[in-house]
Length: 161
Image (tube, rainbow, N blue to C red; front, side):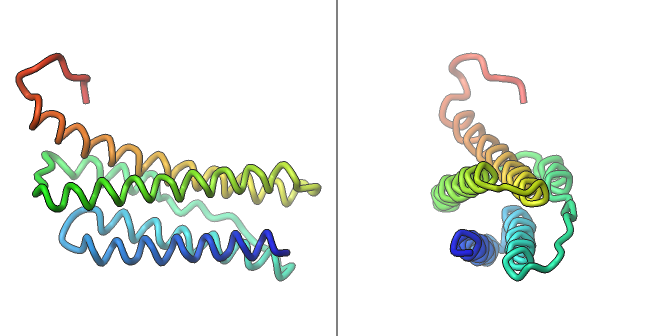
């Protein structure tokens, strides 16, 4: 029971963090990603709350990964001021750490689960958090590449992207 309460609190903290970041980044494309992630974290907290209260839960694919891919395609050439760049690098670092902790936590919970339905729940949450990690990692990579290109445009061969 305490494990689930901890996981619920972690998901709600994640929702709060992503909503704060959406507000901080309201003038750039990061806002929409943060809002999608916040909604997913809220949904994860609901599933865990239902489990804790012994209510039935259902798995819904929120489509975050496919919606994020559409955002990637719409980004084009990223032009970011130095001040925004630093804060976005911090955002990605912190967000990736949070998602990694979630993956690790749910992997641990799955290993302790005795019922198939419980294992299925943690498999679903692991997959969701891995998708979040992939989205954030891809955006972070795109951001780093723009910085590398600006600093080192005339040096070396760049990877295709």
